[in-house]
Image (cartoon, rainbow, N blue to C red):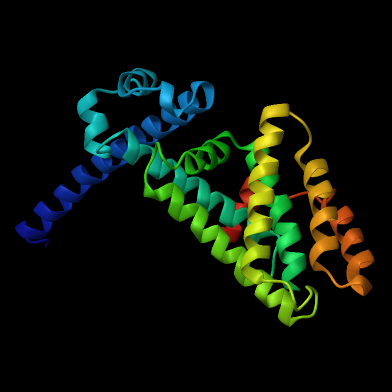
Length: 238
């Protein structure tokens, strides 16, 4: 027979779990509402009242989950960065050449940003450093560090000229990707075509002459290779 203490604990668990589930649903509604509004009108144009109205929650419910609009934006940035990381890892391998990883990863992340409103909104918030929080700067800094490390590995593998400064090259690649996203969003053009043009310039600056033809062909193949589906990215992340 179960003890009274065990019964109380189990009854408490049965009450707590539905409450937690409802709280998570409310939290998700707030995040989704904010993403929609930020995507439609921009972060600076949206106040707490609009988010609460779109999410159909009370201000108290909002403040239960988020200390401020800035805190909410930080969560969106973090989720976007996690999605981008999953997209990058979904097409790369630690055993593959580093430069090939960078190329394929850039295309995968760019396709994610072009197709996923939440991921793209988070990236835009990350770039609005003065408006949001240190989360945006940290996210961009983390990606820059990753690109620099991959360039260093590419140099050691002989795929990038050994006189190339890895920090400068890594930052240039990251800036090129951010700039490509910005222009494609503004002009509504094909991000794959834009990235292909960017890589043609970058490769001529950093790749040894004898490897240039190979990597130009690699970019051409990567530009038409389908990226993983959201389900595949989720499985990869797990």
